[in-house]
Length: 167
Image (cartoon, rainbow, N blue to C red):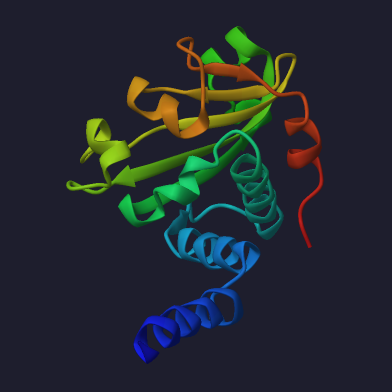
């Protein structure tokens, strides 16, 4: 009889007193994701800050599932393009003047929600310009950023995320 009261009491104390808060868990997961980032070598320190700020914005908004599937991501290559380096399709289709590209490489045996993307590299672009927004190059990646069938979603707040580097 003592065990019927003692065990639940100990579990309750652990649950409410010793477990991490949601903010702490989110911080650990973001740190885990940040360890998987591979910056292109030519990027300046300011461009790296823009990338991290944009990625943090995306995680906090449309691409929340990046955190949920962090353990299924092998690595994530990131780059930043602006001006003459912006690809023609991005200029012509969306009028982008700059964008952050992030390419998560999914493990061969990922979590259930990413099984369609097993072994794939997914391509996401967060661009700023006439139609600021997020674009996924592959259908398998749409789900991660909650994108519609068009694989593009308009997001004017990206302008601010890309404009000011985080400290």
